[in-house]
Image (cartoon, rainbow, N blue to C red; front, side, top):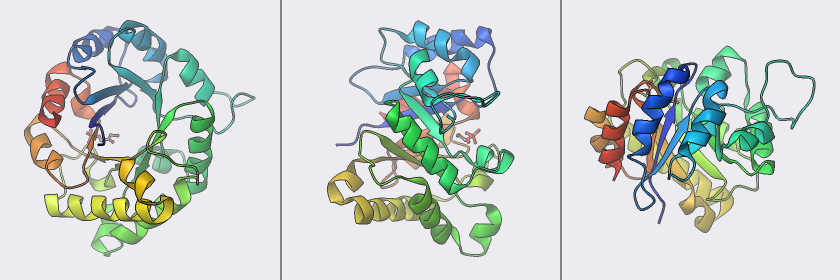
Length: 247
Ligand code: 13P
């Protein structure tokens, strides 16, 4: 019922030469398989979207400003992402929450901007190591979900990514029990707030050190509908291995 999704977040990586990797990844994107999404840096968005035209590969941004346009030097808006060929945008990534001081209310405003521009928002949540050690994981995730997701969520406009901060780029991965506990919790919260129909249709991604070697084990966990992949999405060899494990 929920289409699987393999999403690659290239973060601040990729010059034009990297479009060749995206082209190779495109070959693994099929209309009848898992959905495949690449979120390149803003500079590569338009050329990657042009290259992907007529294929099943989806393109997304990594951030959008809450306003559609204006005097905000260095920022990018949701209509600009859409205009460049994006259909998705990642919002509330922990690197932005940490580096740029984004709070739940900012993420909520960005999500609304994304929806207004016709983009699907991938809202990221996740606990730090200190929060997990203090047994606060579910409280933190619950607060982030409540504060970051606007009231008009649907299965089409929202994807939620669970990314434990301590697992990002570290090679450390939670146990399948830990992933399952959080994903079941997110599903229950979405069903409570938005009703069973919507709550069950929103896709939940796991992110944090997903590699071809651990992907199948992670994808077997209940309520894991795919992955948000950083480092391993930069090369076609690794990312296509993860896509294959999904479907
Ligand atoms: P890594 O896959 O490099 O750990 O990054 C995960 C991530 O932050 C994706 O958004």
